[in-house]
Length: 114
Length: 112
Figure 1 (cartoon, one colour):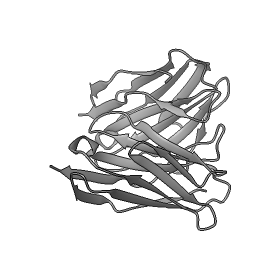
Figure 2 (cartoon, each protein chain N blue to C red):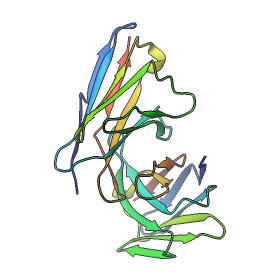
Figure 3 (cartoon, one colour):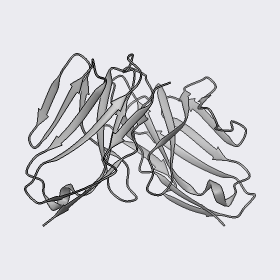
């Protein structure tokens, strides 16, 4: 299957700082990328849908000014968590959609805000 | 929007037994239903999927059934093995380009 690479896999940051997470499709062009958040022992909750060259569409309850999404090319989308707080600590996962219906997931980023 | 309900939340079976996980969805426009296996701290792995023009699909020990009228679909794992132990998620989407909405997950434990 196709490969989606997400970096970093783990990050610890201080409260109030910003963290950028990258999601790259390595061997296909991703017209659409999705960002999910997963708290321990919970499901994947969709945060936003990102289409190359346009503004992301955020799910209800997700602050667009706090979770900045950029999809500047067909192979790269970034999620920046701004002014992070301990309650933002979570597992963030991206997925990328190519020409098929199957979504390919990145390996996830474990964010810990201290 | 779409809402996906998944049951049970935990399931414990003896090795060799079958396991069944059930999901219901709310949006009749959904037409793609994948199932994922997720091990702790790792990415979800697609194990099987079904589209709305098919009622059943099988891949070795894994099968999925879909009832469009009732808006529910199920995952069946036969001859379970300890390595099947993981969290399983169902999902639904409107197919091409559609976002995936996940069920709550089922923690499957297969006891040797």
